[in-house]
Length: 250
Ligand code: PGA
Image 1 (spheres, helix red, strand yellow):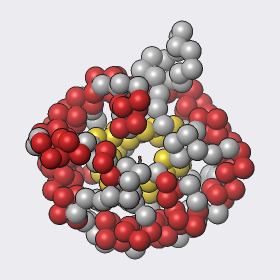
Image 2 (cartoon, rainbow, N blue to C red):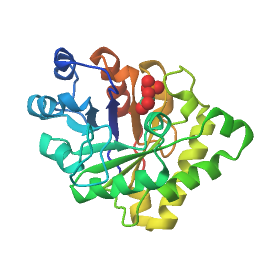
Image 3 (cartoon, rainbow, N blue to C red):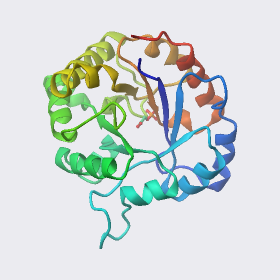
């Protein structure tokens, strides 16, 4: 059984005052879904200390354990601050910082070495969807970005079509089902049926209270990676609720 995961990615948003939103998230008793917030690094320690019922994650880490890398953070530092997850290979990192699959794989390995669960992001651009084979693109990203030795505890995969992020555009439910089914099959083929079946696959890209119920009913969607709608408890709360009541898959 895969435990559903509602993950919020605050990106470069939020200051200490925003932590009030965390206490307003109904993440305590009664949730069947796990709730994760990835705030900016400046807030990780504060968030981890103030909200024991919400898992806290980073938004990136360096592949090296320490050293002369001004401005970067290691996985061990994230863990030390109280993070248990880290998002890796988000399309904004791939676009803004030119991150490659190989770099994402090295970062994922570093995350595992520090005991963090890696949320590895994959997704096609609009041009790739229109002019190439989306599944081939996703297959290449999965093969290149995930190191050997994945387990369901250490890995979460997030499918985030780049054209759906922050745009209000969402793929059809059939398109989501196709890609999630493909990712599941690839994970089973590479890591074995046990790991493949128990690894969580999140959908990300313009998830909102108004579309969450429909998205969470799609097979192989084990939760969401939510950007804009995770910033306010009034939006994220109903998304968590939709996940709590979504059908469970064996
Ligand atoms: P969005 O972002 O929910 O604002 O579209 C999702 C993400 O980038 O993880």
